Length: 218
Image (tube, rainbow, N blue to C red; front, side, top):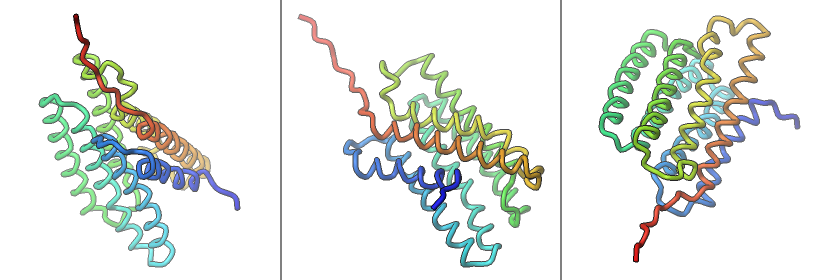
């Protein structure tokens, strides 16, 4: 059986779920939110394939329209928990509320569209800004000595990479989907960036968060 790059992407989304179930023992907020994110992503891909195969096309379109809202809410929650700064948290809440308002209006006006380039493009920009804000907070007021031992760092880096790479293909997908060259470019760029996202997030489940120990002076 030959697997396409899209099949590998779907299968790779199960890897973080399995790593969490079998290897994560500690109570860690970052890993918990990432687990729910990938549980949603992998579950959605399975249900969407079943609905698309057994039911009329309108049902798969309606079901797929739920992907962006749920995905964005989980991602926003992940960023919200990443930094204790109250100003950063307010920034996330206000921007998230504005995006969801725009998204709701677009869903009502274009509920029969399988893919909305504008919404996907805006979501990418929002996640990129959230990521840059996180990095800025870490530089300005570092909370952890070893940032590479922080699951939030790996999860946000994976999301930043995925949405940065996918931004332009998301933006032009709706207009250029019928062109064969763009079709194949989109498939490979989206799939490869998604696979890389899943692999980097898997690191977050494997590392042990660093615990700072107080230095005793005699």
